[in-house]
Length: 65
Image (cartoon, rainbow, N blue to C red; front, side):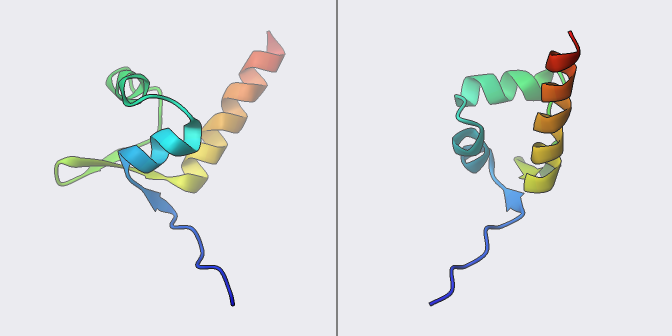
């Protein structure tokens, strides 16, 4: 039985679980435009591959210090 592929498009709740952060932290990132996201209607959406790239970029920036 094949596993269903994970959706590339994620909700705020799914993103919090994925990043292991609280909703408060996520919305703080959104307000300061630190995290890649877009609004679909009234809801924020996140693209998994964009988040993965964002994490890699943050990791590289930290290692460069």
